[in-house]
Length: 222
Ligand code: G3P
Image 1 (spheres, rainbow, N blue to C red):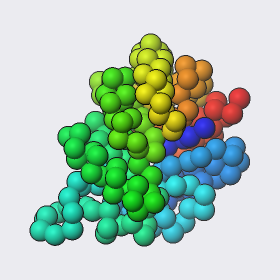
Image 2: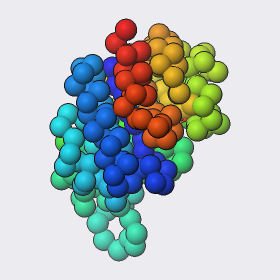
Image 3: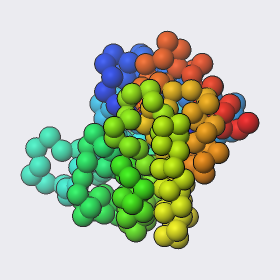
Image 4: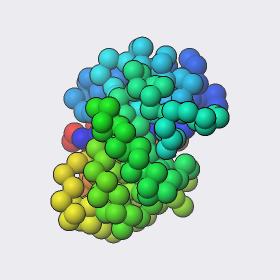
């Protein structure tokens, strides 16, 4: 089971001491519940987070689909590959063309790093499976950040995603996300066939991220 937290850029939660508190909490939960955990901090915070986690994988939230060279303001794999374990790609808040997704997925693969490609619908999720990322996360954009969970509001979409993606022969984990706020939302996602969840606001903005992460982890292993 995979619990992935995208810290986004929720200031001040996703930066500095607040983020490190979240990183320590997710690492603790990973060890306590023996689940795979991923944290995706803002690019500026990657190194600090990588330095304090022991078992949690550290992902970039995005990588630009460019080769090293004259690209002002770009974040490229080559620049951070010593720090990251992988990257989220094509998040709904940072969409990319299919050929750009392919470029970044293959660069990550060649570097021995993981790729978590996001898709807004079951069909798109099945389409990106052809690019052989490490994992796929389906998130209906309209539910992101709403607190209305994909697993409760769109259970059929979760089932359809798992069916469509696995139907391509893709053997990696299929995650779902958007609006996941409670252990019950997580439990439902797993029951519908997901291999884990990709979450943000409910954990990042929680009064105590450890308490919320524990609630999610418990629902995964129950
Ligand atoms: O990447 C995860 C994200 O888009 C889900 O956000 O706040 O609905 O959990 P949230």
